[in-house]
Amino acid sequence: MSRKPLNIGVCGVGTVGLATIEILRDYSETLLARSGQAMVVSHVGARHEHPNHDYGEARVSRDVFDVARDPDVDVLVELIGGTTVAHDLIKLAIQQGKHVVTANKALIAEHGNELIAMAEAAGVQIRYEAAVAGGIPVIKVLRESLAANAVTEVAGIINGTGNFILTEMSTKGRAFEDVLSEAQELGYAEADPTFDIDGTDAAHKLVILASLAFGIPLSIDAPMKQGIQDVAPEDLECAASMGYRVKHLGIARRTEQGIEMRVHPTLIPERKQIATVEGVLNAVMISGDAVGEVLLVGPGAGGAATASSVCADLVDVARNPAGSGSALGIAADALQSPTWVPAEDIASEWYVRVTATDQSGVMSDITKILASRDISIESIIQKPPPPGSDKVAIVLLTHVAPQSVMTGALNEITALEGVEADAALMRVEAFDR
Ligand code: HSE
Image (cartoon, rainbow, N blue to C red; front, side):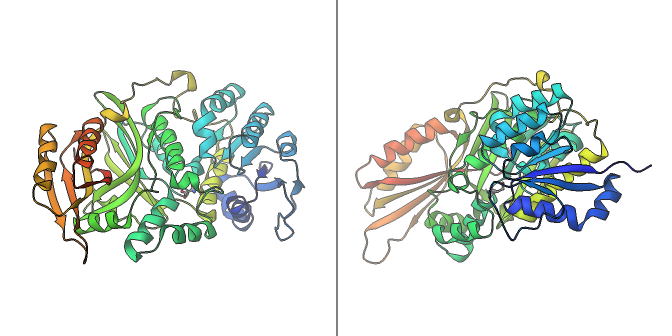
């Protein structure tokens, strides 16, 4: 006997919302075959009128809360974004006994503990595959496929806009602002792209990945956060000339001291597969004790790719409406609060570039400062001065040192006579420690 259709309420009709409605319409037969239930968009919440949008037979409401109150809707798909209206909307949907599917990483990272506990108590599902790394099925992999592993590290390129910008700057020499405009036109960037640029979007996603990986509560304040806004074209060039690529990474790592959580531009040796992931592609590397290292690569942003994850969540709801475990893999009240490693204690190798007057003694002063703090130099290069200038760039790669020790040394170096105050400092990760 065939089941009644799964009625879906879609709130938010931007790039992802429209692509979701299109997939549900165009692939209805395939989705029915795969889930065992027809899926119908029965109600659309669109706060503005869009004369060109085709919502099929769906009822349309300007007030998105009408979708959450509609007794015929089984699953509410939240694609509005932000943490205000979307938050209230999801709470109302859960109170009304509806399953929820969302692509909202900020909301899950910030309010996920509350929402997931509410959903568990109400016996409904909250699914968010599209919230992290767009079309890559990473939530499912961490929650289900790697459930037998103790995960020691999750690291990845988890902002498509940022990776697109760094790739275009380094491979085509394009200007930051120019590439950002294109990312906005292509629907990769957030409505306010500040979050793509300053690392906030990647930090939200890392919070979610870390929670799934380590069985810890969602911890919005945990990540140390640095964006791509200060990555200079000359550093991309220097890194490339030394055999490295600069990627904006999110890293959550379990160490003996506790858990490190950080997002920042990072030099990665180009022999590592993740260093070759370019453009809007994302990549997530997961290290588990049983499986070893797994690398997932795919489109990290864009309407259709993200809608692919939204629809996969809907198929899961249809296949198993009674739910298949907690949204974070472990029941909300069984998550364990960890010890965090403070940012200043997080050790890594470092890339340093300083600008100095081309005179004798400067290089030896710099190396003495590093030696006095027990920072060992792996390589040091002095770039010839540009024509007509007496300023040279001195570029160093160091061995492992904690952040506080490295920044202390750099402060001392940039205070030297003949060295400019402006310097570049980035972490280097070879993922082989
Ligand atoms: N703005 C985000 C990105 C969209 O560029 O990755 C996907 O979360």
